Length: 463
Ligand code: PM9
Image 1 (tube, rainbow, N blue to C red):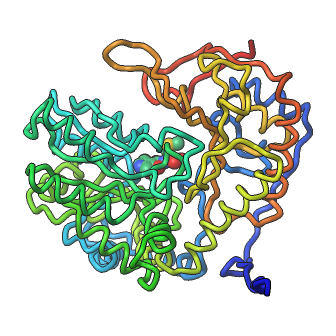
Image 2 (cartoon, helix red, strand yellow):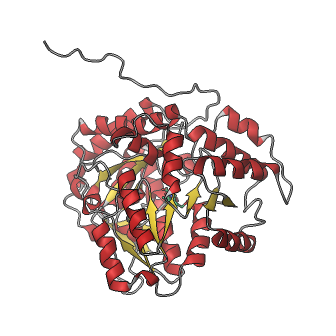
Image 3 (cartoon, rainbow, N blue to C red):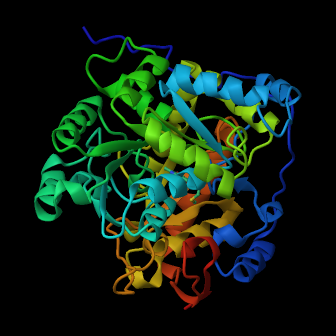
């Protein structure tokens, strides 16, 4: 007898909408003008000219009524704000780290940890680069070494944990340069540039054993750690019955410390922090923060921002919240798949990543296919995504040559609790129609290239 198909498979947003912000559809002629003026860089568009904004999930979240209520309880004292202590309590409770320094956003924490731990000539292995993370490691005198598994560089690979570290690559590096030249291993989860791909707990435990053996520290970019925890719960044996909070706590247990851009998991619009169990690193960071950010009890944030973060931590571990988030990405992927759109597999935690090399096969990588595709989607429908390929990868600081990553992607990122399924349907139809017209699309050339993080401010012209 054929098995009965389960009827109750759908999920719904675990909230109802109380406040709305109008958005406006523009016409194609207007968008063509905007794209040209922005140098075909979606970062340089005005938000008012964007219809559905999938540029990033960073600071673009909708806060809950609980968080907004907390904003009214901001204690704006220069020193010792009660919101700082609430946030610190929640960092201890949910991430299990005793020491904590707030920062205005993630890269400020990256700056501090890089300056504290890295010496000139050091190597920092990690599971694929992230733009700001690697830049701070380089500015501190280090060289980033990619030790992620090979599958992560293959958009078609269905590996469930493409964020895993390849221990053989790590071992090879230790043999080549010596453990003393490696201040820490930098592990992110899920891996943003690989397509939002998680690491497994098994891999994390193996990396911890290896680093312990070689007396190397292990630091965590925990910016989207709850998404990683969700994938562990869904995909890894032994975790199905654990809560997101339990998995997060267990994950953090293996690290010496972590940094977070609170603008993601924590469901706020600004904020970041560094947290650790290493008292010496904490004391240095606590001292450094007063130079770059502000007093150690506010780190460049208002008291109300810290209260929103403290409350965001409590909400980010709620199963319904994180499930809705990941399932929304999956829904987008499933709809795009109906049009045979080439994408990174499996679908990631925070975004859909289009494979621009396959989408625009006729455009060579040095004519920026992903940059081109992101601007073509904007021109078609006002949907804004971003390039994650050769432009984002930048130039090698030693040779000055363009780094040529295997992944040439356009990222369509979902702000938390902001868009509905119908917005996604509009996005899907736009991408499908650009796909139909793909052969007529031409590449781009740089007309302005800034020295650092060129993807933010670079300008292009159509070829
Ligand atoms: N990520 C993103 O859109 C915003 C800036 S880059 C376009 O994905 C990780 C994993 C991030 C991240 C920012 C930062 C830096 C660190 N790690 O932006 O400085 O995804 O708060 O955090 C962005 P901040």
